[in-house]
Length: 609
Image 1 (tube, rainbow, N blue to C red):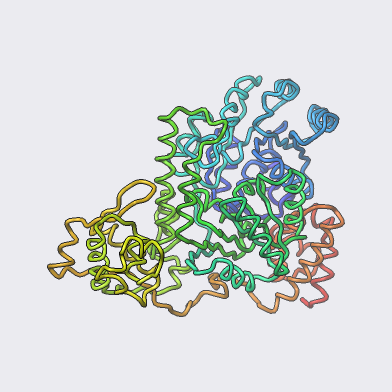
Image 2 (cartoon, rainbow, N blue to C red):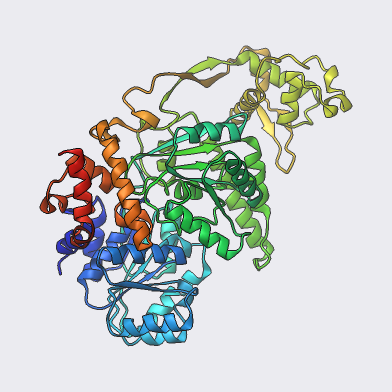
């Protein structure tokens, strides 16, 4: 079978997406590949299509059981013989899959990296024809990555023990240039074709908000996404539990996920979310790589993650089907404190020496500063992300929270003079929060106990919000007018440049937002070209979703395994009136036409072509 036939027959597409074809051709020629492609760009097809074209069984090394199960089920629904081996299987089921694999019953066999050196599996792998090994989530092999898995380091040893070394494909969505070099080295890729097809996700809209009340802001956001699936990420288990209970008390359909729950509850909650029985998943980053749900319409970070890699990977779980989706980050100063604490923790089984530990903390602290800078920037958020991953980006994308706001340069010289004077009069021995309290005239016990209410600068900025004062203090630190000490409780002191502002008339400006209409963007901030061609298609879309849900329930699979939202939208746009026309809808292969075609065509006919 040639690659074009495999693509059309099993996956329902007439052409490859950008970046896919070159990777497929390289693997088919037997060449090693490192492919960095954004979530939703179709990484899986890059090894699934070659697997169908090559003789033998392709191995897919995957880090999570749930991820394996989802991909295997999706392949089976498309008519592709596939199976997985994992630790959740009993001995009889495990041996049954191996027996079928010996017979050549599968084109793809998924396995966790920890099980590669299991005697029974190794014996199988040394006797059968394995033309290709695909390593999913390949950034897990890098100690510079955010999801390091030591078991990934065993992959080269496993390959060396096979009769013939197969082509090796490494796939990931998030990898800085440093991580990419580490992947090539640690997986011992042989003169690989390195394909970086871009990190941009044009269908995602990014936004950062700094609300007074995160809970109220979240409820307002969710009110605009009624009936849609979304993930709410929190930094700690305690926050997950509290937010989950808060949402449930208000009648919202939510489940939770974190490592502190029993395995059975995690499994049930993940399935409820994947199958559409619960609309909201409240989770720590323990809920991550295993989610292959394509119709997630929004991801909200209730707390700031520790690094931009984690943020982009987690945010990228929205809109995997290519339809518009929103990524909202609710930022607060306490998030930085929590992240610093989490970075400083040492796990019980962490056997790294003190030098290695300090290097890790230093590296992660640097990443945290970048993450905080993202939350505070007034520049294009998409551009900030793309530049971090080594890509060029335009000054504005037109589809993020900052680009939809007009900024202007405001003169804050008077505010700067007040802040600098307050720092000096307070003895240059307090931090930003205390200085802000003094300037606002806060009546707190610590202000009175330190007699800071006696200062001439006490209460000279009463009308300004606390966070606005803190923003100005941070700007003065960045511009070199203030120094901030290191340590757990950093203090402020004047830098030499402060004299220019205080005594010589130097002006200080700051970019401040001025609201403006969203312009050509559609509802929710998505670009107009990503909206449905006819808004009247919404009723048809909802009926198709309902049918998909019923079919999925009958088969015991998640709805997106039947068809993605993007495919349903294409049905609305194209209005196919025959089997031949239905087969032309992207995402409809021959097996799915046979199984589901008539049922979906009946719904479309009822709405009129």
